[in-house]
Amino acid sequence: MSAATRRRFVASACAGACAAGALAACGGGGGGSAPATPTAPTGGATPTPTPANEVRVPLMGVGQTVAASIRLVGGLVTPLAVTRTGETTVVAVSRVCTHENCTVDLPARNGASLDCPCHGSRFLVTGQVVNGPATRPLSSFPARIAGAEVVVSGV
Ligand code: FES
Image (tube, rainbow, N blue to C red; front, side, top):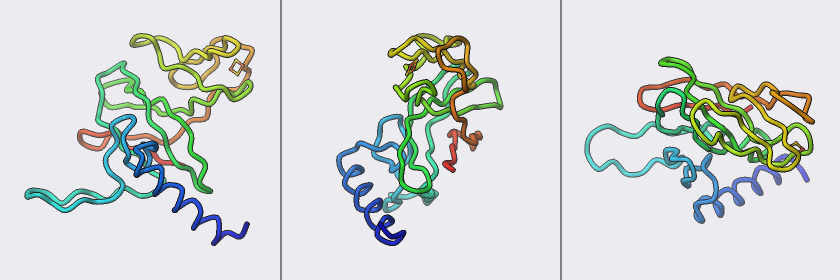
């Protein structure tokens, strides 16, 4: 598949998924992200457009983790765990387990680990392995606080 064909496919697939509300990275919900497609202003401030490989979620409380997903360069969509680790710090990691690619669960409570339901690996919200069989950390993504939102960038 050529790059141009792949771009058209991804755009088409995303448009369909967004219509179904399946991809948070497209602004279709599932984690509270802002719409990727700007809507007509209803008065007040004009919404900030969200780049295709960026996802925004409402700023959560310190210690809280929320689910999101992001479309990476190349079109792959990955589930995320986005955690506010302090007043001014946030982290975002892939929820794809580095053992055999199952999706790790969100923490059962603030401060708990990301647990893999398949073979029991556990990870800190920052991605480091607590116990295996996984030996590699979860992939992390650049994340920052921007006003009342957390902005995660895909790579
Ligand atoms: S796939 Fe996660 S522990 Fe095996």
